[in-house]
Length: 389
Image (cartoon, rainbow, N blue to C red; front, side):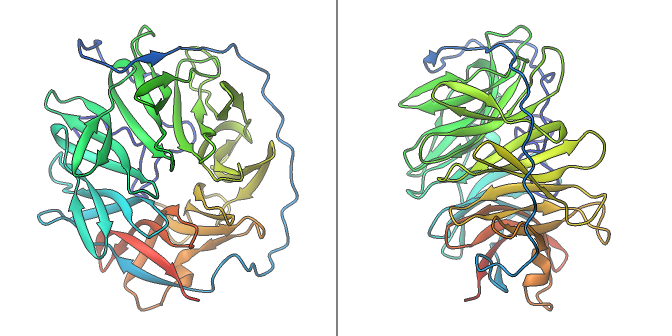
């Protein structure tokens, strides 16, 4: 979906779903389509609120953590026939993973389900491409799919079918996450802004609700837990890309603050603990953790290199990606125990002769299984890590 379609996942070769400040608020389609859309409930645009000052939490000493295994088994999840690369972006409790299989020489990317050793093509909405971003414990899958008219819409992949979820009135959108109740969050261009900007949405009971912004032009919803709490990032000032991480609960969007620059929240577990990344006033992005309204700087793997926390399970295991002195251009998959607070390179926790370089960990389930992207014997592949007991 390169030239003909816009990738709604702000991703890098790490398979990262979103990074602090990515996506901006200034990418706009030229027109608003004449097409059916779901019922839009409200369109709040809250006034700017004072930026909260993060409460620093001392980093615990780097003692061994019972939450992390000493090692993992690594599995190549494979590719679709005729494709050459794959990425895993989401995982559920039984180890089913979703993502995409890619042909880098064409604009074709197909959403896939990795299950029981196989790779299933999830199809499109009549266009060339699709991406699966998340899967819940009932096997419902969400992401994006291209239509025959070339536009990309939020999509639900269920029972062998691809359901178009519509948009907030704009041309395109993307679904990022789904909880076990089937509530879906993402971002869509909205017809109510001129020019159109993307707004975070909640899709529930057949209706798409505009969640508004923090006072700026754009917002993106990136995670949701089973209580319906939603996280993402939103601009704070019209005309500026000064996004901060947000938490949306009880109809209100709360600014979670930053380390001085932009920030984003990527995932929230059922205890309400939130992970993401933030840029300090000067320097590279740091992985961050929000607990009970306080921000904790998890730092980086290597000083001077960025780190991104992508996901957190209900046991406080956090995964993501980080740059290193050995691999500054790309990155390494990382794991952090919330109780320990120290970033570990997952490449040092798999067999040394595996042939893998794990580049980005994108999802983790409550069994500690981790899904992501790496290089296996020179080929870009989706991986599944299973803890060795």
